[in-house]
Amino acid sequence: MIKPLECTIRQIRIFYYVLPFKTPLSIGRKLLKQREGFVIEITDENGLTGYGEAAPLEGYSRESIKQVREQLVQAADVLTGTVLNRDLTQCMYPSTAFGLETALSNIAGERLKLTSSPFPFSMSDMVIPVNALLYPVPEVEKAVKELVSNGFRTIKVKVGRDSLDQDAGRVIRAASALPPGGMLRLDANRLWNLKTALDFFHRISDCRAFIEYIEEPFDWEVLDEITGFFNQTHIPVALDESLESLYPGTFEIPQGVAALVLKPTLLGGVEDVMNLIYKAKQGGVKTVISSCFECGPGFTELCKMVHYFDLHTVDSGLDTLKYLENTLFLYPIPFHNASISVSHLWQRMPFLYDLSRMSLIYP
Image 1 (cartoon, rainbow, N blue to C red):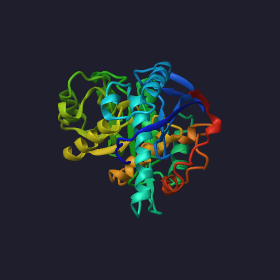
Image 2: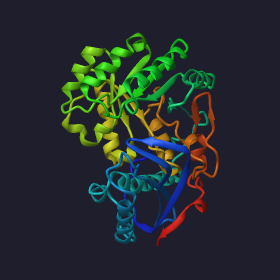
Image 3: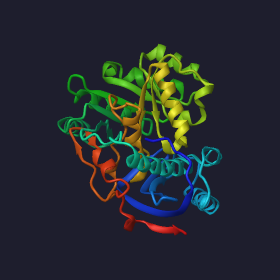
């Protein structure tokens, strides 16, 4: 990912998309049947074009799709013929800022291609290892074994939506199907309180060795509560949605936190995401780049972040395209042995996206 630079904006076009999920998915406390969002196309004074994606995720994002549409149109009216800069996007919704800044970032990348060789993202052997996302299925062991046969060694399991017995049973069965070295990432999305989280881990004590970490195990009020949870369970914690309210310079990573799970669509502009990545590196914890079911330019940017910040030794949370009936990509994303091959994303940029699947809403 290239940090955005200043340039004169000649034209902005905004497209709207709606893509169905293969089956309805539980996102936060919502059951979603489709993914919708906006693609921003920015062209500079030299005719170079960059694309970004602004797609608030219902159930997680604090902004609605209607609010983002209004903000994008207002921004396009103001910015055409001027310079897009960081000061403007600071007051925008996170998904709007992410879409606009990454569109400009892509223009910077196109300029770099013209002035520098080799381009830093032109390696032919780029791969991103990912964890598998396992939604509730009737035959957990069978599903896990199938994922393992496809090369996955890290599997993410959602908990907190069913009874403790159901959640615990699902995790125990998933752990029983893992090979040596296989790991589970659990995600409770802050749906429990501390007492319930401790009760849950008492029920799955026999398979704790298979748990890499649990994301947001309970709805904490102060970060020190996480250390107390870790001391009682010896289960590492990952911070995810709580990072939206924690600016990197205002908190220290507490003992017991093993990873920061970064969803740029929820976190906002490029600088905020970069600061959290540096925070994780300084604190000696993992950074996991994770998708909010972005469908095109947003997904591309997540792949860039993994390589730009040298995060490809950690399984990323990018196993999301498979849940969509179709995507905005003109070409399928190569996926083999639990890894995404992304070299062609940069070789074909900016001609990556199928604009015919979208509706032009601006101008």
